[in-house]
Image 1 (cartoon, rainbow, N blue to C red):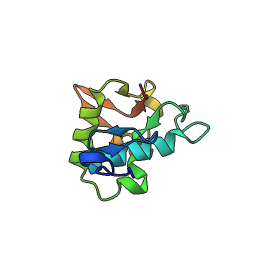
Image 2 (cartoon, rainbow, N blue to C red; image 1 turned 90 degrees about the vertical axis):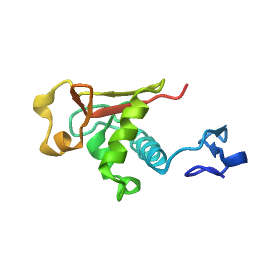
Image 3 (cartoon, helix red, strand yellow; image 1 turned 180 degrees about the vertical axis):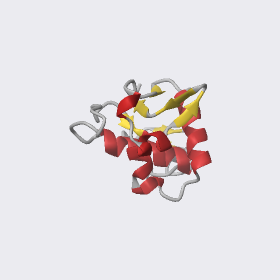
Length: 122
């Protein structure tokens, strides 16, 4: 059941609660899986952000499930997800703390370079 889409009736995916949902692209599925794994970690990331809420895109992009995905497709999916209810991608508020890896991991949304993602279930 579930996984990367197509596990439920008529091509529907099944989420972590077993509820059928719309078919997810492999890129969206990888982003959500990486987010879920990182957000379950305790403590703080290297910038001091609580991992149980906001996830750093540098850490998300480094996850094994994200490897091999084209950067442009990932960035475009992040922009799409940012428009969905319960999903926010924001800039790091203290940009002086950001490393070169953080800057490289940002996604351009509007005129901002955004680094942190939060996905809330509704």
